[in-house]
Image 1 (cartoon, one colour):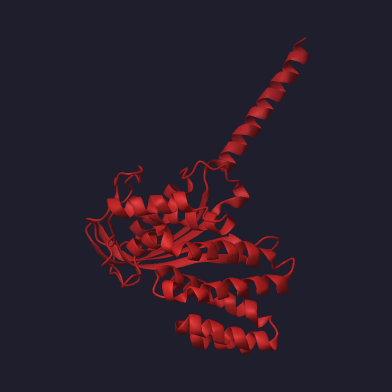
Image 2 (cartoon, one colour):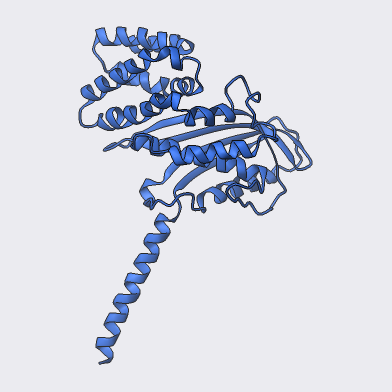
Length: 304
């Protein structure tokens, strides 16, 4: 009887451990890489930068941000590069580079979904302070900033897998902007022109730019994810997707989303069309130069 009673117990505890391990694997959705530097700031001890970097990464990676069960291999891959340009007591000012990448199906390649330079970052931080965050409340300027970018990352990742899949998280990002309007860096006049957190959240939530968000889905699911199976068809699909963007150019040409699409994707687009036929190379080099004049010289590499 002892043996028969032990076996079910072993099975019970084994199942319990496996269940707990599965829960832990799916508990957090983000795999972030954060780097904090201050090359132009005179400091006798830069240890606080390492502490800030470690604390920020732990804050993001150990927190549950959604109600989704995301497996370990499906974690959302984001990076934040923060350059501190000024420190006064516990007040920090600087810039931030934000990037979201995701794997391409049946490939070891990772595509950059989105990248953005935030040139108006400021927050207060005391070394070793506990970083905490609560929705709809600014407990700490730094964690609120991180929460803004985490919600953007989740939304952008979800948009790349499902049509308008990131809407709930873009709404959260816009709520954060509304909550922080009395803080520097969160207003429409901050940053450089429209390149700021205010307009980024506004564009992602504005129905007028719905087709730009659908571009994220179509480009990745109907283009990049098809490359390993059928590169010619994948390239053709991307061309058709970009042509629909051209049709709406009068609406989108001054939007932050279109600008960031090309600033993110121009290196990848060059590589995509290097594998095309000669006539297609010539046509797409001109097409992309017309759509994205800032990088027109770079698109000449397609024809090389």
